[in-house]
Length: 324
Image: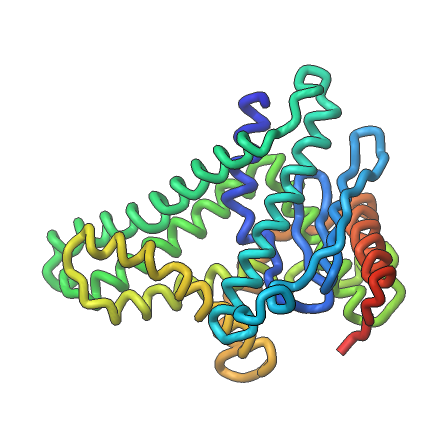
């Protein structure tokens, strides 16, 4: 892979939770490089447009985690299972789209992304995530607390830590959204949302109909991540550790618990639109003005192609596609 391709893959891996829809609903999806992945209850399809205009796909049947492993039907654990599977499918879709892009690059042809290369990128991306969102905020909050007595206590230090983490997240999204490659990914993200809205409306799924809908969706990973950061502050305030090493290790260890709790809150709020809890997810919808952009008709066609192939595969397996 070229340096540019490696950087694009790294950036996309960092954005994977932002672009992913992790709810076990009828349809959901994710933007990838020059394409869209769509997921139905028991099927998956990723569609990518080549430079020559051809749309290529990869599709396969997929069972829900809660059906394969009953343990993941329990609260908190169901969030881990659902989001873990969503991330796994997202990585698979990203690998496929990257290889399609490489196949069209004369200099890099016949050099697809191997499983080893993908694993290496994932390890680097995870290490970067832990450094940027766990180590840096805690280090800065500790330094500030040592210099400002009013912010030295456990509660205030945790609050400062959380505010810094959110600020880093927002700054990262804003800066990366200014690049041409990521802007196109955000356009495909908008196409995915529009097409999902179109499908859920019960109207015929067409480019014209899809373009009438908005680009921000309540099940988007962007909303989930903001809720997760707020929940993490509350959980960290309950952990009575004072040492820096103990704090950083507890933050890493508690990440699965925080993910599960955040999933439950998003799920609960989604069923109670107009309530106070629903308002807690509103900032995520506002932030999607950054992570989604209006797509072109050609980009919407790719998203429609992906959802149609996923739905066809769902029907072949006897799935019932009923809008609730």
